[in-house]
Image (cartoon, rainbow, N blue to C red; front, side, top):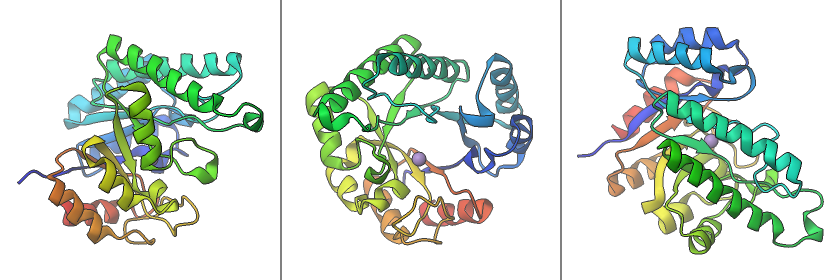
Length: 260
Ligand SMILES: [Mn+2]
């Protein structure tokens, strides 16, 4: 029977210096590791070389999470948009250098002036994703788009919006199903019901349904047994990446018990 690949995001140690995060890689308890190219862990050539060395030593397989601080691919401001796109393409280059299996990125957000230009942010979001897809094709990098919660002004929160995106762009981009984000919108079940065949990567963390707390598995309100059954029914054999920032080893253990 196919099994999910349970991995871990290094998000939980984003507060630490990059070098300390790299030192942890030998003992994370899984070979599937997602690195976040942002904050103190922002990549450069030297850091990519360090990560490659670690991958070799510990037989790791990376996915790379794109930067997202102050990045808005739906921005109505051209100079801001250009800067964001430049930074994202640079990150995609690092994904290529790392032999990352996947580059994960966020959809755009609405802005304070969006109400005066109805639909413009959505259109720009589509255009930016198209452009990122073309760059990904050049690099030979696999990319996937994550669902984000509406409460933080993001554009793509519900499966209906992803369906609209696919209708309008026809782009063969998979979905990163973020369970924590979907839980904030009560959309976990609808996503699996409508778009199961598009889900190629999962982010797993728990929350109370109100705040994106990134709790350990079982510490919030997500129905993990339902999730595990659904994954098994789907025959899902791709990555499930733990994105909790507390109780990481215990949560990794729980995910394995649920999925493997
Ligand atoms: Mn996520």
